Length: 156
Image (cartoon, rainbow, N blue to C red; front, side, top):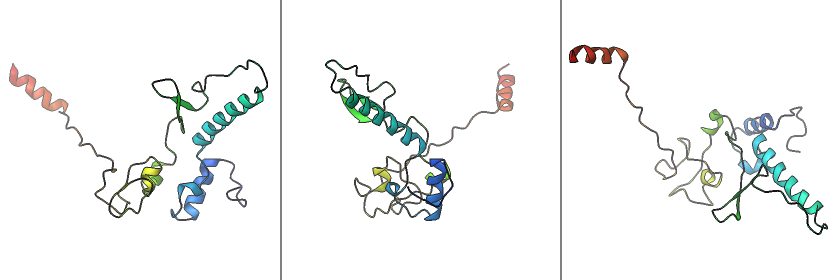
C-alpha cells in the first residue's frame, strides 16, 4: 500500500526504507504506523468490531476497554484517550535524533511537528531556544573506590 515495489514484510523496516528513500524529508503522516502503533490500532478496531457484532443482543457482553483493548480512562472512569503505543520508540534512536521542526518564533501546536507527534525538539530543529527541548541532565560525579579508601585511612 505504501510502497508496492518492496518485498519488505515488516512494517518497521518499511518505515525506515521510506524515511531513507525520502532522505528524511517526510511527514510522519506519510509513513505507515510503527509495529507497536499498528498492533494497538488493531486492538481498538477489534474491540469496536466486537461491540458492533453484538449490537443486536439484548444484553451483550462488553469487555473492559482498558484491559488490553488500547484505551485509557480518566480519574472518573470515562474513556479519555487512546493508548497509541505499548512502549518503546516509534523509530530507532538514530532516526529520532534526525527529526526536526521548522518553527521560527516558538514551538506551538499545531504548527510544530515535534509537538504534534508527542516528541521533544532536537538539535536538528530550526529554533534552538524553544521550551520543548529535552533537558539534558548533568552527569553526577561519583567517587572512585580508590578515593574512598584514602578517606577511610585518613579517618583512622
